[in-house]
Length: 191
Image (cartoon, rainbow, N blue to C red):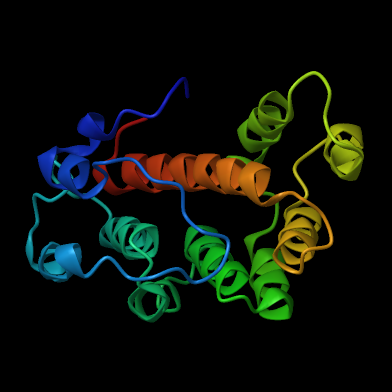
């Protein structure tokens, strides 16, 4: 996936993702200006701009959109009902943001080796650049994406132990984009 173009997900989603923002590593502040639109998604069969073929994966998209706007409780209510690795992934991200790091790890163990991990690993390497900080070396040495190491890094960053919040936010944004795209493609039946 080269770049993230919100318009490819339909106008409703494009409107919800404009303007682009980086999510905080913590729970953030809910964007109440979009609450009504988010609440209407479940009743709108066309919210993804194409016919929905997999309702659970469409719900995974909705969970991700609530999370994008920092409504963790609403995202949680949806993701905990999705008994797939994608549902567990959204669940793990939101617990990482609460921050409830042990619970996040629990959900990432349920995710397993997810389809977007390879691309996320490559994106993280690109984000780190040619001269990554010492605390980021573990990401370069891994052969595949390690969500548990990322949970630990976010915890250390929020605790003030490493100056990693901006880089963690960029990686988390790419993680969100990749997961949303995966769920969207599964929801509408397009690869």
